[in-house]
Each structure stands twice: as structure tokens, then as C-alpha cells.
Length: 486
Image (cartoon, rainbow, N blue to C red; front, side, top):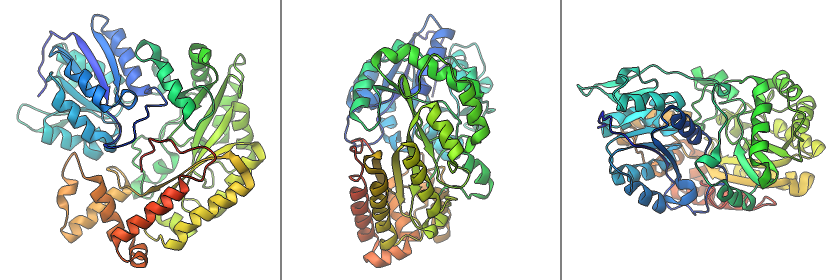
């Protein structure tokens, strides 16, 4: 579909809104990945205009209007950063006046839907890191590089055969620090950030360990968390880089107030006490934790994942204030069926540590374990009640989400295998745009037998799960963000 044309004037990188029908309140964090890609593209091609359009911040309707205004001399890069925003991505593709389009993001990974995007839509796809790949892709568009020389690219060759170029990956310290204000109005993000659930005045994505150690340990046997679609191989960066990253953000954006560094999905504590101790020893002395900046980390509660007072002490001294704990379930049976590698005792230990060190808890629960029952789901509410008795308003945010099988997750693979075994709903797994709500319904129908029997059918079970989810979402001392998607 894309044409080689040296007459290129502009690069536009667009991030569509997350999901159809969500309550739009704007984004709280400026997008790290695409902004860094944009910065590197601008440095490499100073004669090209480079623009970032964040639909999560400006809304899908305004994003579509901006895309329609593009000229045919533009390259449109689209971030399918989750399987949940792909429908919105397709709207942007349909609106585009240019045929120079490349897709990236989590949904575009080859082991998710990237191959289907290339095969079914004739679009070029960058899987994995896009910083170097997009530069190489622009060189291809300009006629300065062969297509097979573009790293991480999935595409159709002249004979309509599917091609996957070699995968390359760089450690974060290889890339430049991000100057968000060159592309975005960070005050817009700061305004939303203050109204949501984190402390501080302005927030940014924290670069720390990438991926999940638990997934890496168990991926070959498919034994990591059933609902997880993180595709990134676990990677530890130079511990000296961590402090430099925070220092740069405090210097650039500290005039907005306290800077809060946020880790959402990458599992941080699996890096271990030794690595984090080295991070602490290399922190710059000119920035003060808990004053100039704070940190939110994401963690499991299993052994080896935030289980020691020594690690908790290092975290507090680093500036960690909020801990997002993936509790997910509150019976050992449900935890085993979710492949969590944790027990209820591990949950209790995290609560003890949070109380001892004054950490705030953001707790998440996934409702839809294969062995789930009414009693085990109601137990999530009881667990939060006990946690609130211990921590009070330090239980900041609680979320409960019905399990949603996402492409790339073990639950998606289980569903796919069951569909082929039954000979039903095969089309769900042979498209780049699967109906995820149909997938959720099939999950409950085929795998949550006990719950469906107790509730009198799959529809009643889904209704009951929504009731539990709604109750959990109201149990924190701060409101659950309006754009929380479950």
C-alpha cells in the first residue's frame, strides 16, 4: 500500500483513543514511546516536520479531524498501543489522505495481530521498538534504504508473501531523554494528572525494568498470568540510568511542582534487592525523594516480588510512595488457576509492609479465574475491607475488572485452542480486529463453569461479575479514574 516517494514533507504519529464509548477525560501521562520516536525522527530529518497527536488527550473526534487535514506528502504512523484501541486506529486509517501509513504498538506485535494487519489490510507494521525502525522506514520511503533492511518490519512483498524482517532491541540508556514540551502541552496532562489518583503535580512514565520477570521465567511453558499480554522480554537497564532519568525530569518539569514517576505495567520488583540497592547508591544527590519527586511502582505479591523489609526500605529511600499491587484474586485456588505464583499469605505480607513504611496501595483484581465462585469473588470485597482496617485511606484506589482475553495472553491462546477443538467461533482468531467482548463472553461460558452454574448461565454470571467490579471500584479513598476501562 505504501509508496516510495522522495517528496515527503511531514511525519505524523497518532495515538487513537483507547476504546469506543469510554468516558473521555484526557490522558494523565504524556506518551513516552511515540514522543521519543518523534524526537529521534526530528533529529535525523531536520528538514521534515514531525508532529505527535495524542487522541487519548485530545479525543478521537478531534484526532480524526487533524488527520483529515494532513497532506498526501505526509507519513502517518499509528500507535495501536493496545488491542482495545484498534477499532479507533482503523477509523484513522480510513480518514487518512496519505497512503504512506505504518502501524506500531502492542497490538501490532507479530504474535498478536501484526501478521493479520499486514496480510489482511496490506499495511506495513513495526513490531517491538520503533525508535530506530521508524527512522529506517522513513529512509525507505525516501528511497534511501531497501524495505528488507528496515528492522522489526512486517509487510507483504511484491508477490503478496508475508515478510518479517530481523528484530532489534536497544536498552533504554541508548535513547535520548524525552523533551515532551517540543511536541505536546504538558500542562494539559498535569491538569488531568492532579484530578486523578496519584500524588504530585505532574506525572511521567518511569523507565525501570521492562517486561515481567515472572512472565520471562514461565513463558516457554505458558505458565505466566492468564490475562497478561505484555510481550516485552524482561530487561534490566544500567542502574545508573534510573537516577539520571528522574533527575532529567525534575530539571525539565519541576517548575510544574512535584514530579511523579509512574510505572504502570512493567513488573519492577523482580529485579531484586541487589539491582535496586545499586540504583539507590547511584541516585543524584541534588534531587530529594518525596519532595522533588515521588515514584509509583507495579508489583506482584509472590515470593521474590516485593516480599522483604530490606527491599521496602530501599524503595522508600528511593522515593517510592505508591505501590500498584496485582492481587487479582484472594483464594489460593483462584491464584493458582490464574498462574499468579502468589498466595493469600503473600498478599497479607504486602499489606504489612505497606503499613510499616507508609506506602499507599493501588490494588487490582481480575474477576474471572477458571475456578472462581461467588464466594471467592465476594472474598475480594472482604479482603479490601480488612486492608482498609489496617491501612485506612492509604488504600488509595481499588479496581476490579472482568477478565478480558487479549491477543498475546495465555487466556487468548486457551480460548483459541478451545474454539478449534469445538469447531466454533474460529473467525474470532483469524482477524486483526477480534471482537474482544465476544471473547470475554466465551471465556466465561467455556472456562468459568462453577460461576456460570451458580449464577444460572453466562449472562447472569457476567452481570454478577459487573456488580462485584462496581463495588470494588468504589472502595478506595480516591476515585477510580473515569477512563478506567474494564
